[in-house]
Length: 282
Image (cartoon, rainbow, N blue to C red; front, side):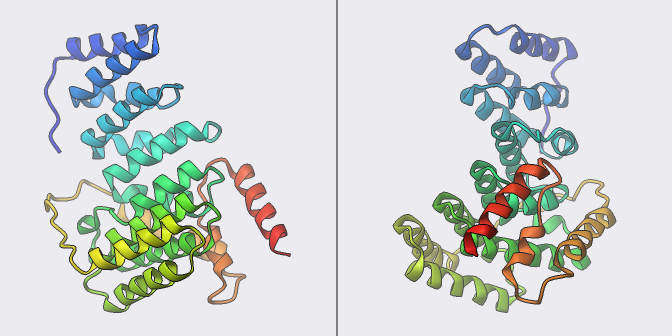
């Protein structure tokens, strides 16, 4: 991560330009200019931009947050919008693009249980490409196992083909990161075969065939920069808390246990969605 040393005056000028923009095109350009300076002072404004009904500005803001990287994570997590699902989808895209371990639990919940397909899609795609090399050895296995189980759940259970498509992409990326766990790799490949033969969407079937071929040739090339100062115990506690709260009453192997990896945002719509889905299976 490289952050420029623009003067506060210059950054403030660019922030003011975003606030003063009086048209969609001017706003998109102002956000693009602000994102380009790659400065931590721009984080609040970039996050606020995700709430505007301006896709061009949102794309620029997401790109800017991803470039800033780790310093933006905590603010993104604390400002996830529980009501505006479009803004939440953009924020999840930023978290997924950064790949910071602190976003893992949020991505797990968003991929498996958010009511908005755009949010589930962004999270599913991002789950495979976390910065796994940052995780300490004692946390890596449980983190990757949770990602694997969640992605397989999405592939098998999500009603929307575009979300299943994204989950296949997530599994493809994850397959290249779990070389120490050949059984998991075989499980992913078996899932690709099953999807390629059985999914109701031709696009998802084709994506599974592509993933099956490319997973055999993928090589992970990572810039092994040292991890930031992360509270790993908190991440581990959150993972175990979700597992304990959501799976304790379900039999081993019951796919419903993965629905419990719900985000801590917008819980009522999520509950309604899961209730409707369960009623439809009765």
